[in-house]
Every structure is written in C-alpha cells, then in structure tokens.
Image 1 (spheres, rainbow, N blue to C red):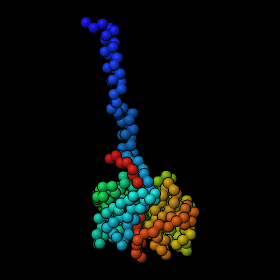
Image 2 (cartoon, one colour):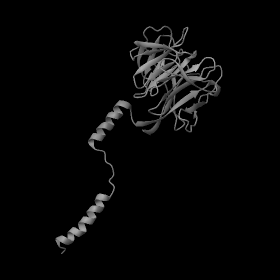
Image 3 (cartoon, rainbow, N blue to C red):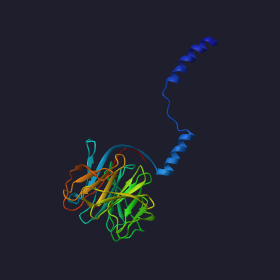
Image 4 (tube, rainbow, N blue to C red):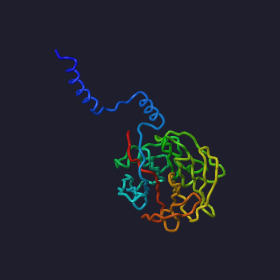
Length: 279
C-alpha cells in the first residue's frame, strides 16, 4: 500500500498537468442570455466592421457591381446577375450582413446579393408597395429595415428586409417625390436630395420632421445619395463630369472619385465592409 507521501508525489504532477491543459471555452448562462438578446434585436448572427468600401452599379456595366476600397486594399467586383431587360432603381449596402440590396422596376421587386459569396442570397417582392416606379433606397443596418423613396409623394416607405410594409414617412416641408436617400447609422437620421437653384441635402428624423438643410457647392445628379456615417461625408454624382463627389456636412466638395459611366446616372452606396460574419 502506498504511503500518503508517495500519493502526494504521484498526484501533484498529475494535478499540474491537468491545470496546464488548455480548457475548452464554455457558454455560461450570462453569455447565452446576451446571445439570445443579440438574436432578438439584430437578427441571427453578428459581425465585426472592417474597412470602408464604395459599391457602384453603372448602366454601362449592368452585370457587375464595382467595388472600390477607400483604403486602397485589394478589391474584387461582385456580379449583380442583372440582365439587359432589368431596370435598376437603387442600390443599398448593408455592412452588418455584407449584402447588397438592389431595387428593381416596377419598384416593389428586390434582389439581395451576398458580396463574399458572390451569389444571389434571395429575391423578394414587397406586396404592399406601389408598382409605378420609385428610386433610391437606404438601409438601417441594425435591423435591416429599408427606406424607399416614394414614386409620387413627398414620403419614404419603410419595409423589413423581407418586404413587409411597416409605414409611410411623410417628409415635412418637402414637395414632390424624394430622389437620393441616405441613412446615418450613428445618429438615426435620414438625408434627402432636393433640387432647385442649388441642390440641397435635407436632414430629417425618423418621423419625417425636417431638422436642417445645406447646399452642395457643386451641381449633382438627383438620383443617388450615399453617406459615410463614420467620416460624416456625403457621396453624390457630379452633374458635369459624372464622377462621384465626396462632400462634407456643409456641402463642400472634398474630393472626387473617377468612375466609368455613360450619361445615365450610376447607383452606389458606401459603408464599412463586414470583416467577420457569424450567421
């Protein structure tokens, strides 16, 4: 029979080996609760944001979504799977899922393209949306609600990422149908392009209340508006050169981005790439 002293010499090295062995992570109740809350608030999955990218769909190359990185890192274009008979009305990029949302004529048809997978994620029709046109759209990434420009009224239409109608947002002190639409992910604000003697960026809250306006110092096309929430910069297509202009909050042109396009307007959006997705 082994003495207590011998047992100590045998057990202690074995104990140290057990303590030194890497332990597999476990999900405790607190972690599970946080995970369930994240699923309930933002949908299934999570993501980590990466570098900023600009996605452009030009009528000259309808089958390809051009991908430009603001940091100059390597990029790869994304197929749109559009055919010559398809009419693109707007494009929105969701940094949470790394998906590109395409709004197609007659205005209530949508295609979702998975950027990393380079495939069609899904297609859907919003049954409660009118089919007499429309234009630009933007997305709120935390719940992937889409805000669509109304084809005839001074209003936006809010739908879910599967096309379920939520509400119509009437824009205060706005005449005609909105054109370019962008969403501020950090401040929960909507930005609308408005024409006139000078092109204006008009800021609205989520109930359609007008907060302020600013004038661009260059003439831009009233088709597409994109907004970089991190840098607080607007992206709009310049009327004369057809390049994309990047503007500050006061409407001053900061720089231009060369793009290949015809006289027809391009559709584009900007946002930080989803560096890590768990879905």
